Image 1 (cartoon, helix red, strand yellow):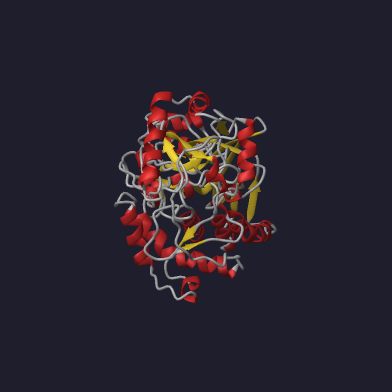
Image 2 (cartoon, rainbow, N blue to C red; image 1 turned 90 degrees about the vertical axis):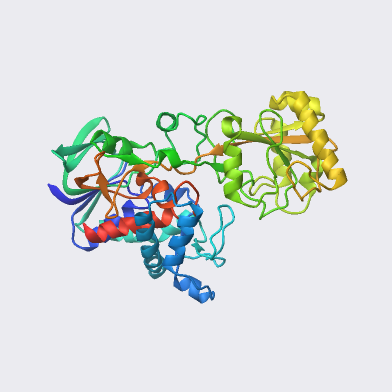
Length: 470
């Protein structure tokens, strides 16, 4: 059988694409390597951005797709692809309206400004009450309904291994299922296979200047779609625009794995809590104003530190202070309990013990603590101008948490044009081959920065566009 459309990847972009195409009586085959559909929607916070939505109007917020476009290009310093950003921001309000019609459960506080990234000038970040699962909650019933027709077929546990080519034209895909190679043929192929945040080797190969991967991404995001397309002549882009996320903490030291939902330090911004800690790099030295508000500034300063990691140091009194603790959704009691285990959090009764347990150089560490304690006493930070000086490291016990620049999503991917057609290394279209979602790289729609909602929304939107077009 020759399908009208073959989709590889049943996630944020792939599911809407398949649904839209099947609705138009196209015969659609979806190939998915996981045992379930949904991809990163099972993990993501599900933040979406759009300008000119009914949700904004209901809150008296005036916004437009044009203002959204301008904000993205400004935050990314012009490094995002303007054609794709224009496409994404124009389509975004329709995507929100589509979700609304599906009875998506918008969180009552959204749309809002998000300070974990550089905030937009206007509150336009929308999200559900259950993060990414809120999107799945409305997609799954529609998916099941579409599967019940004769237009959509979904094959789980199938891994993409190659594209079937005739000259510069894609005619199908090669997959592996339970050790058996399978070939499928289609008029068009769309790659929505996700990024490469679950593949340390792929990450290292494409980011040789960065430390080993610390991943909070879907472990099945291994870059197959990008690799397979590249072997068939596709161009790639965006790897040079990579920037990591702050806050990752390994529950198992040296595992390379972090998890936003289970162990994440609140170091992206100081907007949501009063800073009661100091940050030191592996040389035992402070390197920034821990009270810095701008998330982008913080990310870039930390990225310049050795091994892109740092230690968060604080005293006992900081745990008992009012407000959120340094660890997202952790109580002070949880932090103390973890510190007793001595793996994720270190507890020490002296500077010497703190240096020994963290591996930090004692002399430099002690000098740093002494100097900062003096700033606390005098009420003035002479090094970085920090104004939140309620806590130093005056009385033991002291605590230390090692935090890494981590990967939630990836910036490199397959190069596409504004029609989402995959381009070869000569800039020419590879016929019948398209891509969307994280497979084209976060940099395509967000540049070398994190623009709130510019991963999930473009994925949904681009998937729907292709489903309506192909």
